[in-house]
Length: 86
Image 1: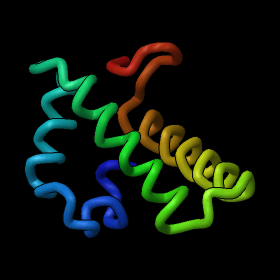
Image 2: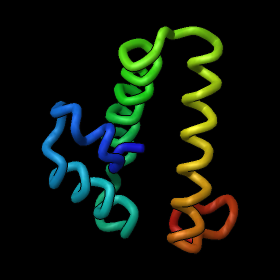
Image 3: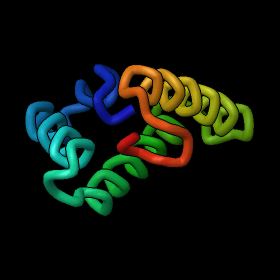
């Protein structure tokens, strides 16, 4: 979700910096959990209340999109269930 064009095109963050933060975290170089969490919360809020109407239906749409992205990400990175780094 953070690396999607939709998120990066908002202009809140420098796209290369976000990619570096996520890459460093996933590779275990630096624990960026808190920063990633904060950016993710802002993106979810934006999708719910700026891109959409904040309704229960909007929550459902965001949850579905997030879940689908999570599954695709884990498949690409061959992560074992229960482990972010595999």
